[in-house]
Length: 183
Image 1 (cartoon, helix red, strand yellow):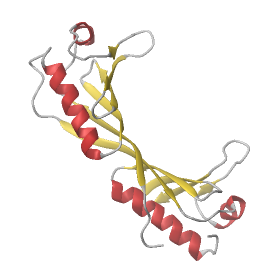
Image 2 (cartoon, rainbow, N blue to C red):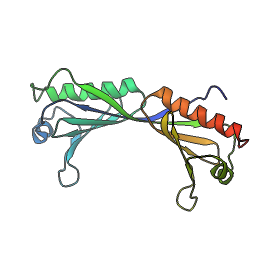
Image 3 (cartoon, helix red, strand yellow):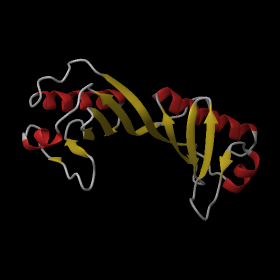
């Protein structure tokens, strides 16, 4: 299999705006519609953006974590929109800040059923405990990703920093399974 079709399910991105944020001021400003803040439950603000549909976690340290985006561009756009809204409350927030992709979760279908017990015996760097979890965990070092393989042939890739790493991880797993006559 040379070309695997992967679907991005979730992207986690982070940013640091380089200054402390007064979370109570942001919450009470009403600039971020639908923001919630309950310090006893969680140390940050939770802001749900409608477009792109994401959630941003905003911390007093000036760090933000965005989750739920289906593309890297949407992830970056969500953080920029969130910071732009925060800047209406705190005009000292810098214009420039770095956004880092922390994790990409993608799914794929190998179009073949897998005997996970046989895979666990033959394939290196795997963990399979069906009493604990129905999938087999396969850790790759290049690219550095973790794949969850299921008997149905479905695969979930996590830990990727780029779409191409997620795709390459699934393709390498398919190739290795083919080499071992497990697919």
